[in-house]
Length: 94
Image 1: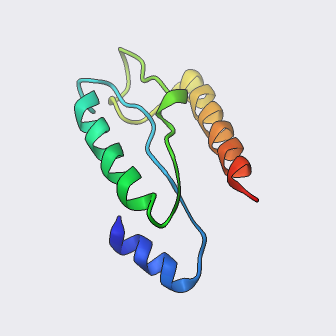
Image 2: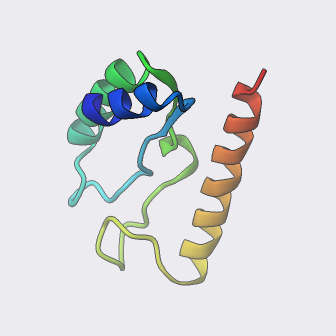
């Protein structure tokens, strides 16, 4: 994360990091997701804006692989996720 942020910073780019959506507990345990987010927020937040996208996603208890959203419901979730992220990006603009 730091290396990627350093490259972006050196190029003069504005950095906006979007964290991954929620996953099924058995595949992406909450404790591991929390540790990843803590790291991302700490490092990416030093270089720009960080958006936590987990609050707008909840992975279904059954079906799928536990990580990727699928089908009609998955499309709805993905659209909601994208709209939330877009709103957060717009809100972070001066």
